[in-house]
Amino acid sequence: MPDILIALYFQHIWHKRNSHNFTLETSQDEKPEPRNLIA
Image 1 (cartoon, helix red, strand yellow):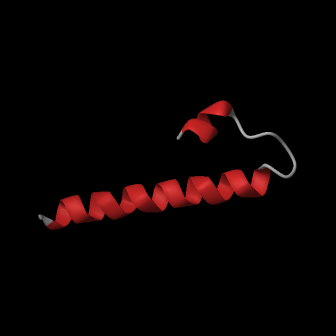
Image 2 (image 1 turned 180 degrees about the horizontal axis):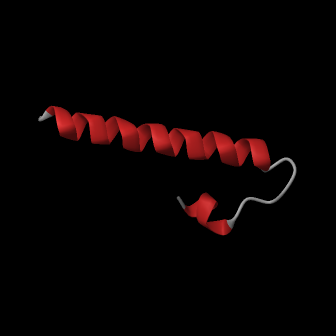
């Protein structure tokens, strides 16, 4: 697998991980948006 695809793959995983953590942190104060639950 080319290095660029590996980099994009890990960037995708990192983004999902950050979005998940963000949802967990904000859900205590306000309801997360429906699109966050679907993603």
